[in-house]
Length: 546
Image (cartoon, rainbow, N blue to C red; front, side):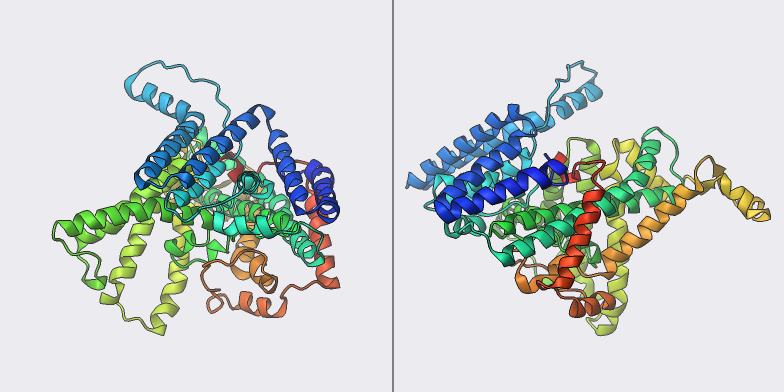
C-alpha cells in the first residue's frame, strides 16, 4: 500500500484517523497509541505479510538488547551487547540486500558459478535497521535510561516514516509519543493535509510526469546505444529533477501524515538544488541520513584518525596552515570511506559505489576549498557575488553526473551517459528536424550533427519539463519555508534561506506565507484534486527500494 494510492487515501488513512481520535477521546491516548501500532503493522503487512515476522523479530531482538544494556552497569559489557546487536542487524541487512550482489561479483571476477537465490528485499529494512541502531548506540552511551515497549515499538514502525524515513532519534520522538493526546486538532489537520496535498502533487504530477520522458533514455543507454550530448544531459538533468520532486513529495507527505495525529517529524528535505556547494547539498538532501552518517560513521573515523595522527607527533587541522597530508588523512579519508558506504547503502550494485565515491570526492574537494581558499581569495562581498552562482552550477552538474550512475542499471550504461554529457558521443537530433530546418540541416550535418530516428515532440516536452521543474526548484520557496510559522517539522539546523541569490523566492515567501485561510484551503484542495486525478498509474517512491 502506497501513500499515493486510492486504497491509502480513501480507506486506510480516514479509518486510522477516525478510530485514533475516537479512542483518544473516550479511552485515552494509550489506546490510541496501541491503535496506531496496529495500523502501522497492517500498513507494513499489506505489502508482504511474509516479512512481518522479520520486522517484529528485529524489534523484539533489539528491544531485548536495549533493556539488557539499560540494566547493565558495566561499560564493557554494554559495549559487547551493542557489538552483538550491530553484528546481527547488519548481517540480516547484508543477507537480504547484498547476497546476490556479492555472489554475482565473485562469479564475474573469478569465474565461479554460485547460484543466485531469489531474495526479495524486505520493505524499509534499511530504515528500520538504522533507526534501531541509533537508539542502541545512545543506550550504550548512557544517553537513554528508560523507555516503554510501546513507545519503542511505535518509534520503529510508525507508518509515516517506516518505509523511507526520515531516520528519527529517540530524543525527537519518545517524548512526543509519551505526551501526545492523539486527539483531533484543527491546526494539526490543516497543516497535515496541506503538507500531504503538496507532496502528493509533487509525486504524481511533477515527478511521475517527467519520469515518462526519462525512462526511455536510460533504457537506450542500457541497450548500448551511444548517448549523444542533448539526450545525455536531458537524462541526467531529468532524473535529478524526478528524484528531487519524488523524494521531496514523499518527505512532505510523511510530515503531513504524522502531523495529523499531532506528531512532528524532523525536517528531511530543504531545497537542496539551491545549494552552492556539495557540503550544503548534503545538509539539505536526506538530512536525517546525513546526520546519521556524520554521527555514526564519519565522526568515529575522524576522531580515531586524529588520535592516531596526533599520537605520532603530527599536527592536526589548523585552518589555512593545515598540511596537505593532515587534510588527506584526517578529513578526506573518512569522508571518502563514509560516502563509499553511503553509496553501498543506497543499492547493491557497482554503479551505486561509483555514486557514493563521486560524492566523497566532491565533499573532500569542497572541504579543502573551504579550508584553503582564503589563501587565494579575500572573503569579500564581491567574491560571494561571483562564487555563489558558480558554486550553484558546479554543484548541480556534479550531482547530475553522480545521478547518471545512480539511475543507470549498470556501470557501463552510466558511463555511456557521462561520456555523452562530455560530448564524446557527438550531437544528435531527431530526423524530423531535417524537414523543418531546410538548408540548415545540411549545415548542421556538415558540422557533425547526426540525425537519428526519434520524436521531436518528445525532445521538446522533456526540455519543457526540465525548464519548468528547474524553475520551481530554484526560483520558488519550499513548503517548509512557506509554512514555517506553524512549525511543519521539528526544528533543524537547515541552512539559512538563500534569498540573496534567489530574490524571486524571497519576495514570494514574504508575500505568500501559509495560514489557515479560505485561499489556502482552495489551493490545497486544487493540489489534492490534481494529485488524486493523476493516480491512474500508481508508481512507487524511488527511495522505497532502499
